[in-house]
Length: 255
Image 1 (tube, rainbow, N blue to C red):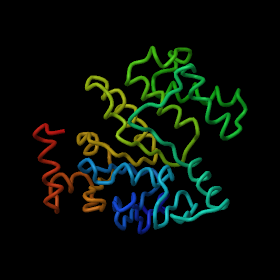
Image 2: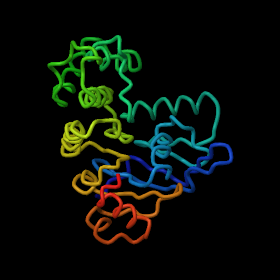
Image 3: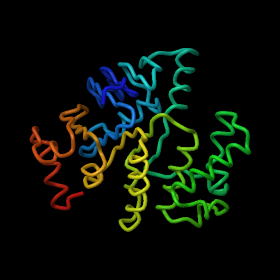
C-alpha cells in the first residue's frame, strides 16, 4: 500500500485528571486497511478510538482524518467546526447499540443523515434500505428495537453508521455485549465490509477475527502501542512478552 494514510495519529496524549491514559501514541491507517487493536482491559484501546473522532478530547497531539488535521486540547469555534467535520468522516459502532427505542429500525437509520447532513428524506430512506440490506436486515425495517436480538441491534447500528457514508469505520468492541451465539452474525457483517474495502479500526477481543481479517494488528499496553505487525507475524512471533501473555490467555480461553 502506497497511498497517503487516511488516518494519522501523531504524539497523542490523554490524561483523565492525574491518570495518564494514552502516552505518545502515533499510528497511521491507509485507505482500505483493516487495523485491529488488541490489549488487556484498561490498556487505552477504547480511549484511543474515542480520541480519533473526539468523543474524548485529546490532551495533546494531532489527529488527522481524510486530510482534516485537528490539534488536541484547543478551544474555540474553528476547533469545534473541525471536530464536526471529522465526525462526519468517521462512523462509530459501540459496545452498546444506542438505538432509539421509540423509533423503528428505518427511522433509527435515517435520523443522522437527515438531521446532521440535511439529506433529503427520500434519499436517506433509499440509502438506509440499501445499508440494511447489506447487513441482512431490510426485512426488519419497520420493527422496533425491542423486538430485535442483540446481534440484530448491532447490525442495525452498523447500517446506521454506514448510512452517513463515512470514510473510516471505528468499532469499539462491537461484540462484547452479545451472547456468544450472536457474535458470529456481527463478525460476518464486518468481514463483508472488510472484503468490500471499508477502512476499519477495530478494538476487539476476538482474536480469530483479528488473525483472519486484519491487515495489521496493533497491541496496546499501559497506554502505549507495544507492537504493530501483520497478523501472521504478530501471532506467530510476538516480540513483547506482554503480547505473548495476551495471546496465551486467549488461547487458553481466558477471554
